[in-house]
Length: 115
Image (cartoon, rainbow, N blue to C red):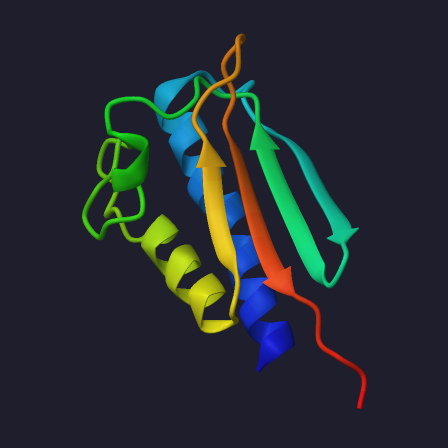
């Protein structure tokens, strides 16, 4: 369950950001980085893109069902990510924009203890 749920979170983050980027900019936009880090007893998954950032919605609203800045978007991708991460005992946050655009999502998940 844990591995499958983690993979679902990773894939949904990437898909959601890719769709948003392509809807708002030309096809030269892409996910510019996916990193994992261990921070004590937590795993951090960081997904960053080089798109225009998150705009058109308050940052706290991007997680709500039906909220989307992507034309034709359902507004379910980030809701699914947040629900899956919460179910795994983790948290997810977003940084809307850097000085030159982009957005970054950070998923924090507890590491499993060895038995």
